[in-house]
Amino acid sequence: MAYQRIYPWFFTFSRCRRLVFMIICNHTNHKIKETMHYYAGIFDAEGFVTLIPSGHFIIGIDICHQATVLSFQKEFGGKIYEPKGKTNKKMYQWRIPSSNDEALNFINRIIYFSIVKKDRLYLLREYLDQTRDKRRATRSAFVNEIALLKKPRTYTKDQLIFEPWIKPDEDFFKWFAGFMDGDGTFSIYEYQDRKKRNFDSWISIFNTFAEPIIHVQQRVKGSISAYKGVNFPVWKWVCNQKDSEFLCDSLYPYLILKKEQCRLTSEYLLIHKAKIRGVDRSLETVSKIQDIIRQIKYHNSL
Image (cartoon, rainbow, N blue to C red):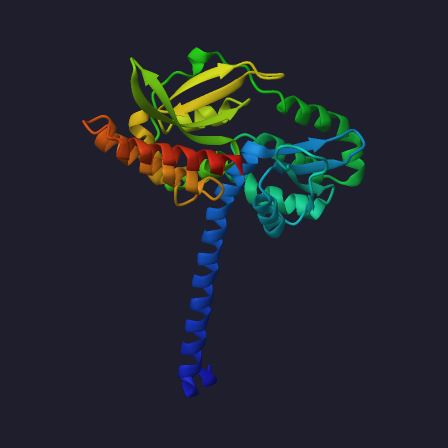
């Protein structure tokens, strides 16, 4: 206390330094939280969680963009495996193979933002939090429960027809950007209608699980359909045309892999709104749109 009276400036400086440190920490935590929404979205689209009877487990992602697996490794650790063999697209693999510390770090940071994989992550965390003897005793039950969650729940199309009732917020668009980068598509196409050249666009997501489709439809209006997949139906959500511009503007700040496709779609929507549905069908306008289509196709092929 005596030192406080003699050197009051020192304690004021210390308090300020501590305050600045707390502000920096809060800002850093906020940034990490922002990033986790995106990581959860892309993991919901492309990730998997597996526990096998031997006790080994794998958390991983298979994706054709090397930057994504490098980003996951930098953030969460794990290993990256280069693609082998000749395929049209290289598929990069990121894995956390049976490393408890890395697995628990990943699960604890991402689980609260996940939609599709949340239940599997909860089960794996519950399994890993047990003692070795307890794990051995409960392993079979956990293996079966996680395996069951890999099978999509059955829905009818009528169950997925409803109007949005939740106002989408920034956190939703961060998650949605990650999911779009994984299982989303920006597309513009040309077609003939009564001998007239026309153009249309769609912003869509696909998944064998209906939960992400429902999560999006609750907030942004779209049309939902299903088609036959290899083992399960594949659900498809396509954004309502009048909401496409709003969706592009909302997703653009958070997209990474499909950022350029989003920008090009926005550019098309401005032309489409201002001219194609008006009176301008000039060669110049058509040429601009065709160039946008070529650019989007190129970026989708990467």
